[in-house]
Length: 324
Length: 268
Image (cartoon, rainbow over all chains, first blue to last red; front, side, top):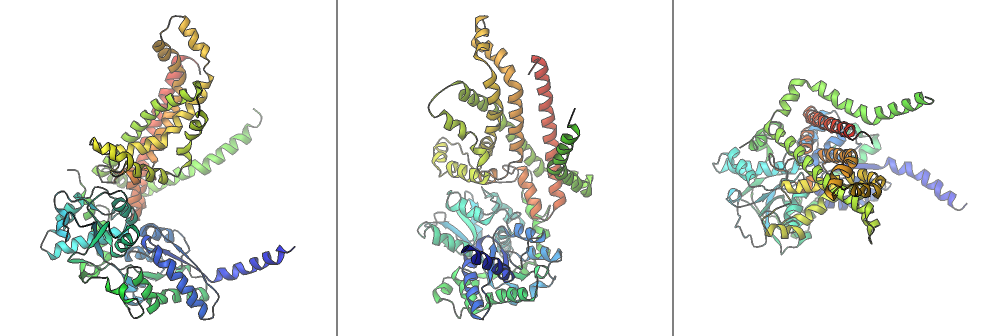
């Protein structure tokens, strides 16, 4: 008898809470960032006089996550590794084709770049991209065909070769000839390098490299910053097709906008992303990023051109692996 | 035949739901993609290399399981020793374990810095991230099939049969070769076919230990996943169809051998 009011209130509350629900479909290395960001945003949203929102986040490979959304996963917000993955969702009619112009900075509230993680003391003396093709150097990177993040690795190497007068296709081919294990995802590569002890250098997102240092011990690995790398822009978008009503639209927009506030940006800095607005960030979090020359994806021609040319079926990456 | 209509109806309905419809969808996908496109997708060095790798290693793993699985079943049925029941239960573990867990565990053990990997590396034998690693993972997931299909048959074989053979003057080898082996043959072949079929389609455990280098350690199921990542459902279906066709041919062959071996011994 005592249970009944409790059960009743649960039944009544559940739909109300659901109306304030939000699903953010994200990629792998943002787990830690969004865990903290969701809490901060929920507190912010409540402080504005709203009910506590129920925010869920799903993580996985960027391409697989995009396919889930295309196949009907009801995400109101996507925060993926590549603009081209969100382009695919747009092509399926779930959001307008010009989605990337809706939010500042190409809809990328935070950016990152590709750096090298080497073993403690850098025994192979790796300083720049050119050292990666040396005889006997083993490079760990995931397969760009299965890992969205690895496409940035590949394109960063490509950009360096272009700027340094090397034949980029040949250089990238030599680099991948030095890869002994081609994992399917970025976390898999980090495990292969850090836990299994394979390889001399891991090509990693800067935020992943710092995370590996923090979690696996600073005495085991060093971060090497190459002379040039790529400006990796993991974009965010509101999925118009999955918005149920105005209340949900308001919540979803506020969620994305909060990423751009000084508080949201401070969290991005804290989780090793290069964000835009450092006004509320811990100065130490900002100071740890070294200066380097960054090439943007638009300098290379934009995803619409690069994706099919390099990573499409029979594209340049496929040509690296042809029968000897 | 009372109840034939009902049982046939249920059988056909369930088979349609769980087998024919998915395979039909795959064929439909292939039909939409077109025969020329399917052939263009399959007829590439990288795809042939992956198919050859997948089927060759699956066959070798199934062969190993055939021999080792029958011995294991024999030991479990014929001998009484402490811990027998625990080993008997452990045989099923590869069925129950998520394959990713198996793959990560095997990789951790056999990686160059793993407990066993350190030993094998000393003799210059690298297991993880080579074809050996793939083979090992396939042996792991396929082992219970042979043991579990052969075990009940061995339980049926009376020791008197062997004794009769011995009193008639047959040597132990002769008894094994001409009395025991023919009785075990059909069940062992079934186990072999199941183990082979399972290995061909295995993805979860292999992907961690394989290294996934195109032309060397890239399995066919990974190629399918790669095509899916490119939103290229047609090409993924084409490689799937190729695997289906090869698997079907192999299973058909095994069935024919089975029928032949049953005819030869005249019963079972």
